[in-house]
Length: 196
Image 1 (cartoon, rainbow, N blue to C red):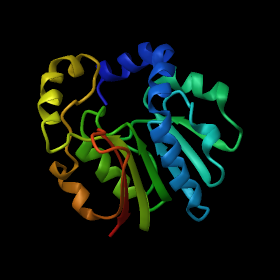
Image 2 (cartoon, one colour; image 1 turned 180 degrees about the vertical axis):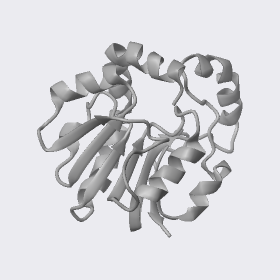
Image 3 (cartoon, rainbow, N blue to C red; image 1 turned 135 degrees about the vertical axis):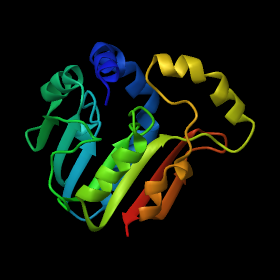
Image 4 (cartoon, one colour; image 1 turned 90 degrees about the vertical axis):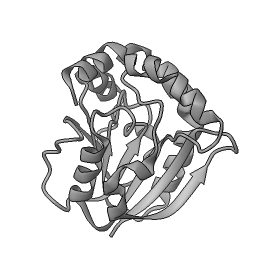
């Protein structure tokens, strides 16, 4: 992640609770899926301010973020069972095949290189490991023009308004197991993949 993006999220950390409030329904569904999975080692990339940490009911959890400001807030909320580390999701310091699950909650559209992020997620996942992605995705209807219109503004806040998962080649290394849509015209989806 670039220095500019890192700096932006350090400054933005105090305002992030407003974003969390807006994303709460989607995150509740994500954690419903996570907590149904068998106990395992889970990596949460882009843990942010840790507002969702209390939603983990099980698993051995490692949460990483590139922003020291976000992690400082997260550490105040941390329940001792979660290991928090400052790390770039595009250059993970973990060995191969370390995790049963990798979670990307509203992260893939804010990193500099989504392809590299998915390559790293694939590398650290165990065989048949699960990748859970909660994000906005540009729909194939008239709303795609709204996304394009917000392109300039979204760049200012280090966010890709136009985002299509099928345009990232590495996703083909995973098998899609489940797709959860939140409403007919919702931008948000929860995608559950398995490492092939």
